[in-house]
Length: 131
Image (tube, rainbow, N blue to C red; front, side, top):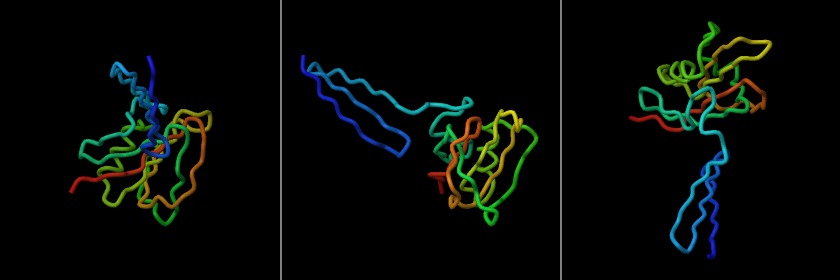
């Protein structure tokens, strides 16, 4: 049986591979984590905002775009919801369980900062906000 393989890149961090055999069998395989800290990728907030999730690091926001923080050990999901309910928020950085930090959240109004790979740190970037 001959197989045809096609690969489509949906975002820089999500690749979907579709394998189709002549018998019309289709298999879809995601090559990125479907969740981190129990948060799906993409994450849809309670108000309908859609966030692209970065499970292997974070995008450092700039001091000019800082909107607020919660260092009282919030969850990653609570951090994303905090961004979703804050006017102008585009980025939620979560500093998770590391030896130096027991959890924290910072939110920003810009995506201008650099991206850093660091275990235990996650971010969510707003990609769609309903009207």
